[in-house]
Amino acid sequence: MGGSPTKLLALDFDLTLTVTQVNETTTVSDAVAIFGGKDRLDLLRSFLASLKDHGVEIIVVSWNLRRFIRPALACAGLLPYISEIFDRPQVDAFSPGRGAAGKALLMASLLTDRSVDPGDAVFVDDKSEVGLGMPCKFVCVSEAGVGRSEIGSIEAHLGMPRQRVSGVATNSTWGFDGVSAACGC
Image (tube, rainbow, N blue to C red):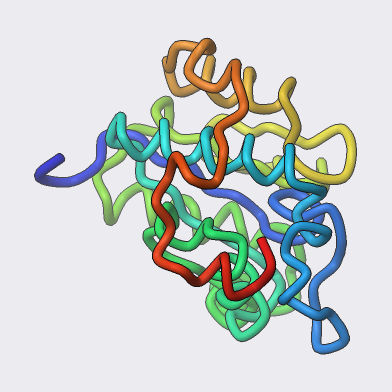
């Protein structure tokens, strides 16, 4: 799709996209486990692919560091769906010493910069306090990682048809570039 996106999905990384914390002790080659198993990883791929196909821009906004986020997303075959990663230094720049407010302030800036209406944006996080002051719709994951119920809420907030991810895709459906195969996904 040409031009600026009209809708934006911002996802936290740890315990939102993943089901565990990812750091220097994590082995990203086990992306299947990091993202909650093959079925959940396939569900995430299908969900993100559907949103991207419908012109939704997908970004990651996390307190984690890009050096941990990017390899994990690449190994899981999720990186092609993510347009940008905003990590701790970028979040901190918006709220030095103010905790959760940084994500909301960063999101407000992104909405303005991208000319996205706040009603057409969703932020997803595992911490409810992140939703305080969020300038757009907010979905708090109820368990470790985004699941089917959260996907339904996100789709509804973005005006997407829920049946888009009712089934689970297989890895071969998406034609990955070999990165996920090399990582044991």
